Length: 148
Image (cartoon, rainbow, N blue to C red; front, top):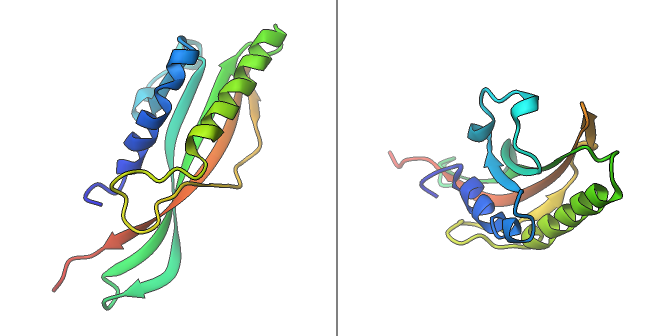
């Protein structure tokens, strides 16, 4: 993997077809949130955020090759859920669609076993009329150092 964070772009592309079912839905990266105030945020949205990695014990070639589990947060955000049952049904459908698109998906070009697996995420948050539901996935990848 030449770009350590390339998986984020692949996940966003995998989720973009959801905008056909929900035309007002935005699929965003962390870059899209820079400087945006809550009142200006495009919602509903699915945010794809790199949450770090977990080091594994598998190390080879004198430490130059290591297996890591990258963790990606997919945050489904929706405004004014308390107002209508239609909005609640909509966000529930979005969550189900995200899970269907990502669980068990093998992104192209990811070395090692890059199959996405759902892992424990923080609890949903309600903030100023916005519901945020975090869904976390991890994918195994190889981290390579240069040969000496």
